Each structure stands twice: as C-alpha cells, then as structure tokens.
Amino acid sequence: MDLLIDIGNTNLRWAGFEPGQPQAQRIAGPGWQRRPRRDEARAEAGATAVAPGPRPHGDTGLGEVHTLRHHGALPIDLLAAWDALPAPSQVLVGNVGGTELGQRLTQATRSLWGLEPRFAAPQAEGFGVRVAYPDPGRLGVDRWLALIAAHHLVQGPALIVDAGTAITYDLLLADGEHLGGLILPGVQLLRQALASGTRIPPWAERPEPGPEDPPWAADTAGAIAGASLQAPAALAERLWGRLRDIAGAEPQCLLTGGDGERLAPLIRGPAADPAGSPTGIQPRLLPALVLQGLALLA
Image (cartoon, rainbow, N blue to C red; front, side, top):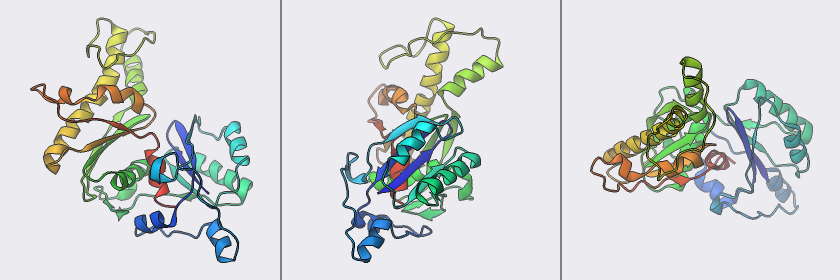
C-alpha cells in the first residue's frame, strides 16, 4: 500500500492506494522516477507481494478518503490513525499548506515508518499534460495534480474547478494542453472581505440559497451569502462556455475541493446561455481529484 496525502490551505486529505502494475506503466511520465515499492522488492526477493485491496473509487485504486482540518499542524488523531496502519511502501504528498507543515509531515513519516515522503512538484510537460505557465513552479502543485488526474479520467476537454480556501479554474484541452486558469477568493474569504473591508454591519449565518431559489436576496445577509456562491458558479459557467467554443466540443466540468458540493447545484447550463437554452454543463463532483493525481505518480 502507498499513502497519498493532499495538504491544502485548510484541509488535509489522505487515502491508501494499491497501484496495479498495468496502470503504473500506462501513466508513467518523464521527470518523475518511479521507485520500486516495498512489496515489489519483497516479491523480487522471493516473498509474496501485497495483493491489491478493494477499489471503492473505480479503477483509481484509492481506498477510503479521510478529510480533516489541519490548522497548520498534524492533529493527534491523524497521527494515531497512521500509527495503526501497516507500513506503506511509499508516501506521496501534494503540499500547498506551507513549508513548516511539510517539515512536520516529514518528521512524522520518519518516526512512524522510517520513510522520507516524496513531495510532488509541477512539471512543464509530463503525464500527458503541457502546462501553460512559463515557469511551472509558479503553478500550485494541487492544480497540477488535478490537471493530470483530469487528463487521465476525461477523454475530451475539461474545466477543473477546485473550490477550497481559494477557488481555482483550469482549462484543459483533450490533447493535454493546459490553456491557463483563474483564481478567486473562496466562499469564506469573499464573505470575510466584505466584513473586514466595508461598514456592512455584522450579520448572522443563514441558510444558503438552493438551486431553485432566486439568485438575489431581499436582505444584506442573504445578498452576501448568495453572491459568494453565485459569483464563482457564474465564472465556472462562463469559462465552460469559452472552453467549449475553443475546443469545438462540450467539456466536462470537474468540481473538487471542500466547497465543491456547495457550488455544484448552482452551476447550470441555462444560466450561462442568454437565450435560456441548456448548454449541457453538468458538474461532476470529484472530491479526491488531487489524490487521484498523486496516484498517477505511484
């Protein structure tokens, strides 16, 4: 088993992964040297390799995905859960949570299993994807992992929306060309910006608008809550339409991140078409998309 860890700005996700050799051969890309896993080394020495376990996430090989807030540290209950695991063959990490948290993770994996974690880094070209950024290192590793996962999962063009602390949008053509993307503050940051940067009085949380509710409100709290969801949803619809025009085919809209489930019902085709006719956009919620990208590196 490999251990995959996605460290975001707010949340940490992790899952076990049982890679199959055919998949590893199919997805290998330049610039990432695949190390022999411990079970493979045992098999070469005459021992029995660990058999792949259940695959609840289809052909990705991911086990149960665990999510928790990290608050800039590794919670005690997380370390306890890892301590109960069999020693993984390797630890693969995508980290945008900061250097200090990465160092704490390294200390933990050394202490628990005597392993050095392998931190993913964006590549200009690899795993079928060509990154638009002139300096790939400026692209968040979470966005790059989501891009390579999307290219592996989707046959045609794709719009990837990662709704976390920040909301990122990336446009990907069927041949793996990354056109670029956009970044918005996340839902909570949008609300906090209004609270801290204006004289709008403090407001209490209220039920969030649903997909059948009007996209406006008759009170301040509702106006702020609704706009912080409607704005990122509307941008997704706009970018999806532009990508459809460029690609000449309807893209898939892949939605991930902690607020993906909140945005999914609000991203609808008719809202992006002035004539009111359906455009075909149907968001596909994939909470573990970044982990699926890490699985390609195993």
